[in-house]
Length: 148
Image 1 (cartoon, rainbow, N blue to C red):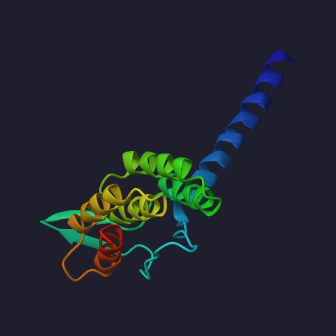
Image 2: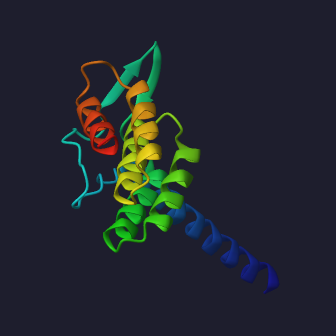
């Protein structure tokens, strides 16, 4: 009886683990939408990659950083720039070569009226993309607005 109960329990546990595994795989297949709102936004296709100095940079955030981007946008929408900035900095620790996250952090600092920091972060984002990349134009807008 005890062995039969253990076998059933083990099978149930294996089923839960299998379901969790499938959920994780499916979660990894989704892409987080780029934040929208009144802030400077980039008309970039999801998953577009950028190259600079022979090293790879990315514009598409993974699931963890993508969720943080969304949360940061929510914070910015309600003008909690301190929380938005902290959240974006956490996303950058996950994906330090993500030019899009650097751009969003620069735009958030600009909104929070941290002009010098906004310009610095936009320059960092530009360093991760090629000369003709569309994100560069958005970064240049941030730099120009920060220096007004």
